[in-house]
Image (cartoon, rainbow, N blue to C red; front, side, top):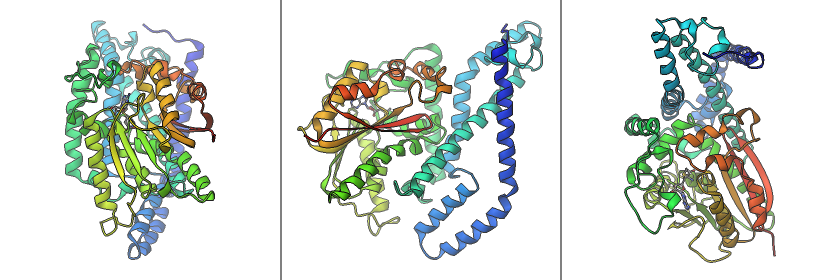
Length: 461
Ligand SMILES: C[S@@+](CC[C@H](N)C(=O)[O-])C[C@H]1O[C@@H](n2cnc3c(N)ncnc32)[C@H](O)[C@@H]1O
């Protein structure tokens, strides 16, 4: 049975106060909702006939004024599945232990079952295990919804600040808003979630089916207990949906933070008379290339290379880029983007990039470093330095680390339990020192929810 300590007993009271404050603020928002709705609907009506893009913008603005996230079907589905999946995987095993021990003691819930760390804090006997689970869900729901709202607002502020365009995929005609498309993805995700959960409970990852000297040993681990690791079409097909579920629909918004240092770089380049057309960007470990479509949408005339070690993920990236083109090229349904920058696909390792020295102006790398052993992180940074032109920039986006969000420090390492063997080392790794050692200068740092973006500059010779 757990016992509470005076210091830990303060936590639920604080949480309740915070929840009350959130509820009050939500109530306030709801109160003014009907007024705002009418104002925004008439604004929406005015825009409707004039320009489709303005209309979409207005819709997003409306959502933001109402302090709601973009209520896309896909986001809602991802958010709900994510919440349930995450909650179950985090708390179900301990909750079941709590329930069974309560029943074993003749249903005496006052014995406290240990459903979670707060059990003893609520006052022993005050709640049944089921009530505890429900209150847990409520608290988690509020925290996570608040986190997502803050992320969407930050994303939207960047759009308004002209740091990057409105996300092109928010158009209602995007396939991700098609219920059939989303249902198919959701069904595949649920199937994968069950398989993953089973492996996680057993603590047994599935060995990867393919061996090749192309792939380093650390690469053939099945990260997150996912089926086939990085090496199948099935894995690539469900990756985006599953990660959006994991992050409650905010992954794209977090990744778009990577566009901030790129925007600053482009502005400086413009002052020096250079245009994106004269530059070249490499995205390393681009996965399914979803984020690359946002880079392309912001700088369509810039030549780029999408690279990854997995041919399956690269094939998916090509599909994503083709879909972006199919909607965004002049004359197409969302039209208007001058897609003259050629994009190529390259199967290569971050730590041994296939290509000449000083080829690129920008190297972008998202969500890779936490999956690499420390020595490989150093080799990758050295390669980024080699392939960049003098004056070039690396944009590195990955998980937050210890100290970035101090209130998360105690639990941040838990993600390592998702068969992420290098994650715990990653959260305490000094990334600035690694990049400085190979010759870079530290540049900017941005935080967005669970993600941070760092940029590093290669000095001019
Ligand atoms: C977590 S995913 C991130 C994908 C993408 N950047 C995103 O944010 O959605 C990691 C990706 O890194 C690739 N990868 C892992 N190790 C790599 C390495 N050493 N070199 C190149 N790619 C690697 C995997 O194939 C996978 O596509």
